[in-house]
Image 1 (tube, rainbow, N blue to C red):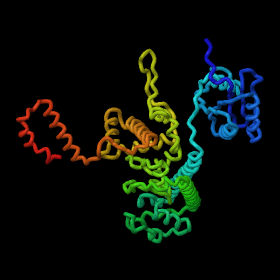
Image 2 (tube, rainbow, N blue to C red):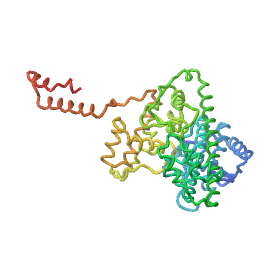
Image 3 (cartoon, rainbow, N blue to C red):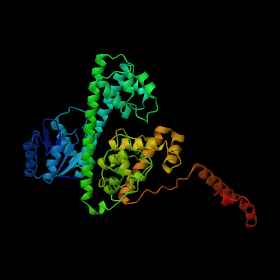
Image 4 (tube, one colour):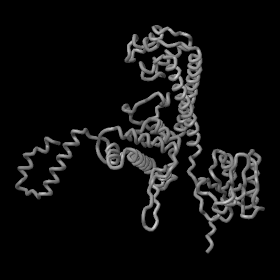
Length: 453
């Protein structure tokens, strides 16, 4: 029995770094090789139009597919960008010609599904935010190398200050790079908020003054300052881009978010931008910052990785969590579940949701932290992080797609109040269990339940 042909006029494209192989059929005459220059990409579109092709499928190979994808979409083709693991050929010799023919055959039978792609606005914001993340990682590496050279110089600045890249630390390092090696003068740069005294800081800054280590420290300090300038430039670009996008919709400009004074602002938070207000307007009045455990960086990642319109591409919350690889992958055979592990693989959105879930595990007396502890008690903290991250994804999907605010099922009560409510709940259960009669109400009143409440 033959399989039904779903896409009769389609093509399969094998993406490469220096050339692309395009197949419009299964014979060798139906396969052509094209280059990667702009004229070559245009030639691919013209050949497909001449051949009567309406749809094309390709693998998401690195970043080589992006230019051809944009060119095909601009010429009116329906393009299916699929994961490479879904197009693996049968075991045997592997060539570019065979790969493109195999992709074309799978697409003809309708066996390929497209990957998630954000809209153009979200893609631009994602570029800025990912570039900023790259600079933060480089800056972190430079600070670690500075700390290493300070330790080799026996300048134990890391012992007397919490962060060598803080106000006190950077001022002292800058003075060291200028040639000042006097411990007392270096200690005079102590900020008034520093817990250690000036005398103790001076003791920690008596080193061996080796020239090679001083040279390495100076270069790493200059690199750190350069990375910080690049981060500031990214912050300005992100703030300008979000302001432009929000100002394009007058109804969004009128929205005002509630201040979140309890949310911490660390040194890696975007400067000159109120992310709380920007996210509230960006998601058209949906306040994601009300969810406990979600930081400014988490909300910014949600905005840049999927955007406000990206959630609608997933019909259900289950599809969304499955795409994030936060849902179990059940393998069933013979009516038995052989495996239900979470699939391997990750993306930036999954990472930040897991980080938020880990932070929720350290909170007290909230709906999500109670859920985290229940799972951790039964299956361990690692499983609790995954389960809470999935729960967060479901909450966010429902908030954005269904236009509802965050409404936890339980109020956030203090621990002593919760204990009192448990006591009252137990008394009520006993009243029902033992079927206390109306004439015994006086006994119940003697318990003074109103005072407990």
